[in-house]
Length: 396
Image (cartoon, rainbow, N blue to C red):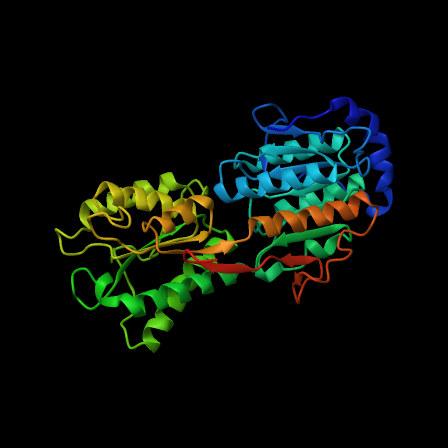
């Protein structure tokens, strides 16, 4: 957990605010992610260790806001980013929004009031222009830069509106459709090569379940859509029938985490319920599981394990193909053990490295986007950086 030298914050607050005084205008609106106080239960503090031989690079006091600490992928980004900031000698404080926008809003207010010189925000309400623009307005009013990461701050129709409203603003994330396309191609290729084995009841079709992380989230929407569409495209080219959703009464053709947490618990509960009706005994077993992230894949695999499926290489029982997104350490282990088929790597280290680069720019009184030409920049929005995805099936 983070430690924080509060005395250093108080001594540097005035200096830090002056450091970025020329960064923006003075509009003030309220914005955040999970309205809550910056207390031990909602925030974690960290101060870099300093000795006479290792001084802080600057007086920068960075506030980093995570939509929740419980998300496995976000936890990995946080661990990696903390390490990089320690190595850079930057003072920072982490906040856990706990999936609550109001809490995050209050945390942002607290951070600004206590002298934060930069905001780094993993916004709770993904894709909300209202939520993200309020955060930008807060940063403008304080005269400090703001960098959003991982979770979208606007939708396709409003792309560039928020990020283009402030010259000391940037976004580090992924090209939302890319993961869905890659996952779909991976699934289609796998089934084209293993169709008969996957078709447990021999009816010439593959019955699938889809677990969606969050309604309204751009990444979840595109992963849900393209994973199926692109898989069907590959299957059609291979002369195979398209996928069929396991439950004909569900017109959405997905089951969503109602709490928006992309959680293993949600998928596990759904899968256990599904298997009570859709199974080999009833000759309608779910033959493929597609998940928006690896956490949900873990939950689905756990439910399959309880029914004697996906027990691992060298174990008795059948294996239902399960695909996820993120390439978390847990997912890599499941793939290595033969319990999971594949995932799409979301590069946590690459994301943390890029965010740290932007923080270093600010600490050195440079423009936020200085020296980022080597990154994949959006064609539409010049301060939007995409970290590429990659396939993972056990070999790197």
